[in-house]
Image (tube, rainbow, N blue to C red; front, top):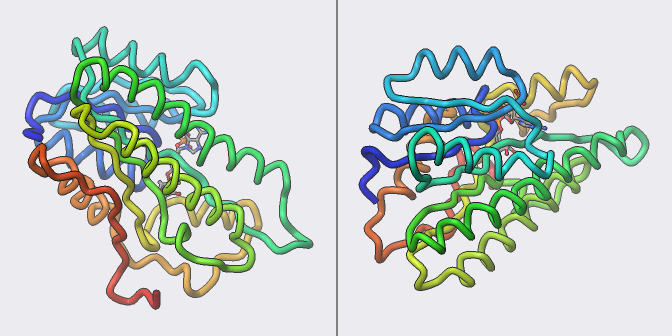
Length: 240
Ligand SMILES: NC(=O)c1ccc[n+]([C@@H]2O[C@H](COP(=O)([O-])OP(=O)(O)OC[C@H]3O[C@@H](n4cnc5c(N)ncnc54)[C@H](OP(=O)(O)O)[C@@H]3O)[C@@H](O)[C@H]2O)c1
């Protein structure tokens, strides 16, 4: 895909990996619709990007948010070519300490919302005969670690869901894949600490969000015949 003048929707763009993807794609001439809940962050990022950018401040788990994002992209830029499902949270805890309501919210954000957005955009992409969906998974999808079983399980489910969607869309002109980052230096760990959750030594971030953005660009810029179905990007210090 030639990126210049394409239109991308990026979820979870107010910080971390989503912000880095927004900066990278905007620098490459992609018109953006960015979303997250913190409107001031989105506003500041939109003003700082080199190219056109609209934003929608909304909880991604609301059923109407994906369609609202698509409508915003079409009304501002006339079409949409790329969806990056990146919004996510990381909830950890032991059997004794796990916050079950936080787990339920993580399920809504990390899986339910991604499925909903994938279907809404995949229908549009299939109808136009082109498009790309990148779902941000995690190295956790491949691990069985105590205290993060639900996060890992949701990311594993996301891998399988995305793979099945890719197969369903074969021959349609729509490209679908996952990127699974290793530990990356973002606010996700600050949010854990703020909730009183322990961050393990092996969760010390090694990758920079820009590393993930570069990998997403690699996925999106393959020739039409090639689909990066799954990309695992770990740091050189990661012991997996
Ligand atoms: N950092 C890592 O080590 C790592 C490793 C593997 C995978 N990942 C994945 O990478 C993705 C991005 O995470 P990150 O590390 O960049 O963390 P981050 O800096 O905390 O970013 C998370 C983004 O998701 C948004 N978000 C969270 N809950 C939301 C909700 N209910 N509605 C709408 N937006 C919501 C946040 O924005 P608001 O708070 O403004 O809503 C923020 O923009 C996640 O899917 C995560 O699982 C991260």
